[in-house]
Length: 112
Image 1 (cartoon, rainbow, N blue to C red):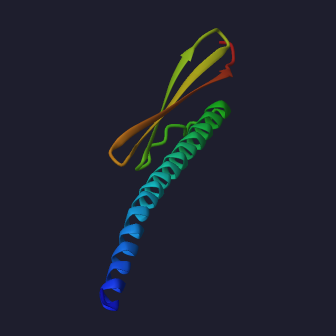
Image 2: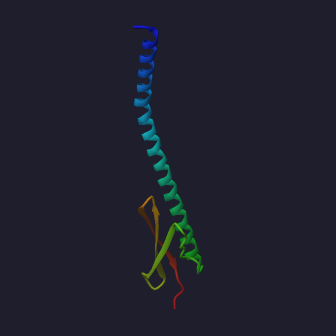
């Protein structure tokens, strides 16, 4: 076998090894990127609900938030004469999948 043929085979073997090892790395990188994005969205959703809870507890009227990506809804229920329960639900779509986070909070209300 001449030198050109030997070099050609070495290049083919090297390319096949690179392609076989590169594909799993690309797949894992894509999965990690998606996981980081999901965690980021969950964290943002948590802080939006937390902010809504704090506004609700302080008596602010501007609690329900409809932004382009997030929808926060609050359901209130009087559970005793002085305690009001608020159920906070945030919904968002990410890559065609609907996600939801729910939180409950309580506040003392004035007796009537």
